[in-house]
Amino acid sequence: MRRGRRCPARMASVGSPGRRRIDEIGDESRRRILDAAEELFAERGFDRTSFIDISERSGISRGSIPWHFKNKDGLMVAVVERAMDRFRESVRYDDALPELAEVFQDYAKWVRGGRPTLLFMMLTEALSSTGGVRNQYQEFFARGRKGLELWLRVQRPKGVDPAFAAKQEQDFAAAVQGATLGIHLGALIDPDGVDLDASLRAMAGLLGKNVADVWRDQPAPAKRRAGAASKRNGTGSRERRS
Image (cartoon, rainbow, N blue to C red; front, side):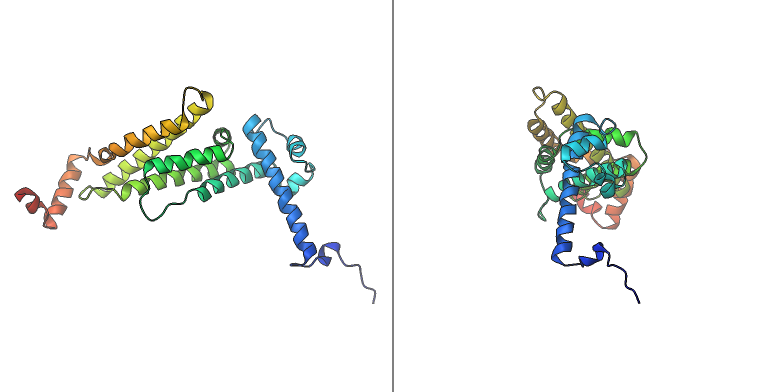
């Protein structure tokens, strides 16, 4: 019985030095493509960047790019994923509640560690699409808001109506996120007029001093419910006697 030739791909078995070398070459090619794409997307934007541009910048053949990422949208999603992974890896807090200034400082470090304009290029693409980039952008910022909401929740005063407090914390987190993006954009457009670090420190100081205002304007019905709950727990009478 005549045997066929062995496929070269099967000759390098899994775990063999040859297979590992192939994987290393593939990983290096992927990294170089991502580096080049991230630079070019930040410099020129998504639409004005072609596979030919990425090939020339990375030194990887044009035909290898769709092999790794299927198409341009897939490459964009991979660039966004890597940028977000860098941010998640850079944020590490102990069990203690971090100061807002520390949170903003980590954000500034992340901005400088990558491409400062990449975030807004991602925003432009997210606004003009309904695919993976938009979904990932939404997830990234939703995580940021959830982190701020959690930071507030652990400081929530006792007796505040939970539904009211949750809505206030959600709105506050969205406002802080928007202000942070505004400072970031201002520093990109007018770096001489907007100091990213100083502006973020100022905002952290202002918010830290006035954080109690988040729950201050509790509606009257919510106040009555909170008072009734305090009375049931036996705390209302003690407060009146004091």
